[in-house]
Length: 175
Length: 149
Image (cartoon, rainbow over all chains, first blue to last red; front, side, top):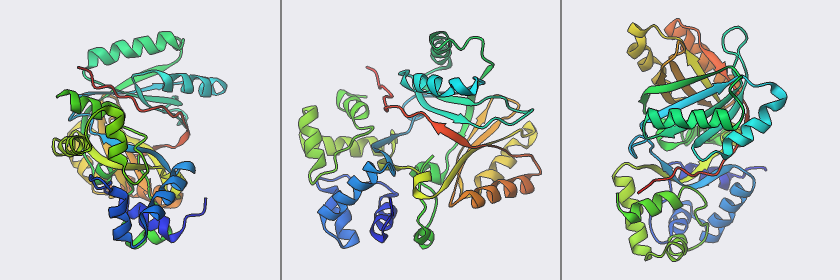
C-alpha cells in the first residue's frame, strides 16, 4: 500500500491516541482540515492493509496488577516452528509470540512467547500447561521473568519516537 | 475495580468501531449509555490502567525497523547502563530479566541501517556486546487479557 501525505498526517495525529469523545474522528478531521468521512476511509484502508494491528485500549499491565511477566524461549526445529508458534498464540495466557533468529554459540532459542500474569506461581503453572499441551518438554527452553521495567516514552505512546519533522519519510510503529 | 471497568477492559482491547459515532455503537453492544462509556474510558486512562487509546501501528509495514536486543550487564553497572540505553529515543521499552542476558529492550528505528547504527552506538557507549534478535515471524493472537472478578 502506497501511503499518501494524508495517511502520514493522520498517523502522526493519532500517535498520542484518539480523543475520548462522542465524535473522535470528526475532531481528528477538524485538526487535519479534512472531512470526517476522509478520516474514516483512510483508517479503514490502514486497517485493511495491516498497517494498524489493532485499534482500542493499550493496557498498562503492571498497573492492572499483572506483575509477573515471563519471556519463555524455546529451541524448536525450524520446520515445526510455525505450527508450534500458531498453537502457542492460541493459548489464552500467551500475550505475544514470535520466531526470532538464533545467535550461534550464545543463544540457541528461536521461538519466543510472553505471558503476563498476576503472580509467578500462576505463570509457572501456565508454562507447565503450555509445555505439556504443545509437547515441548524435550525442547531446550528457558523462562526469563522480568524484575524491573523501565518505562519509555516510545513505549508509552506505543509508537516510534519520530517527530513531525522526519515523518516526511513516513515511519511509525509500535513494539 | 467495578463491573463497568471490567467490561471496558475486556471488550475494548481491539476492534474499536471506525464510524461517526463509535462510542454509541459500543454502548449499545455493551448495554451502557454513551456518556457512561466515555466517562469510563476517561477514568481508566486517569487511573493509569490504559497507557493509550487508539491504533497500534505495524512498524515494519510503515517502513520502520524493529528488533529485540539483549545485553549481559555486570550487576554493579546495571542502573548506569540502563540510563545509557534508555537515553536513546529509539529504545521503546527495557526490561531487567533474571538471566545472564539481564537487559532486554525493543528498538524501533526508521530503517534497518538506522537500527544497526543504534545497536552499534549502544555497544560503543557502554563497552558491552549488544545481541540482536530480529523477528522472523510473528504469530498473531486475539487480545484477550482477561480482567477477572
